[in-house]
Image (tube, rainbow, N blue to C red; front, top):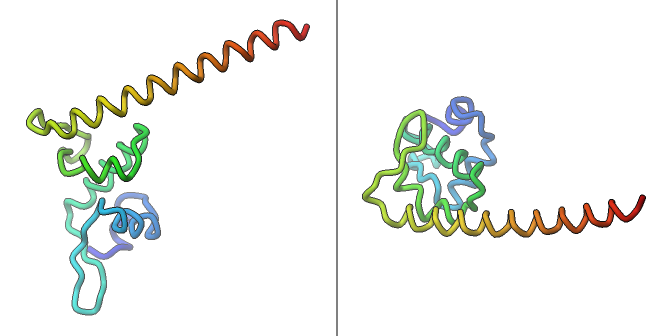
Length: 117
């Protein structure tokens, strides 16, 4: 399928699909005329990338683990992919730390608001 078809199937713009390719998240075959040719499996790949982005992972991190993700309609992580498990644990720890910092900021702001009355 061509890039326009993949864009329609996934709801992701052509520009973003080209960016995913630049980041190593998609690897379409190039025809003799230079057009990108995507496989049906790329629809699932784009959906996996979108789900991982929604989870807060960067494209750099996703490029390291997207090969581990399977499933057509949902993201499934096979148990035999320790890279994925380790990266996800690290990212979860990073998110947990960010949440703690934000909660601390909120507490300080609440103190300011309480004293402002």
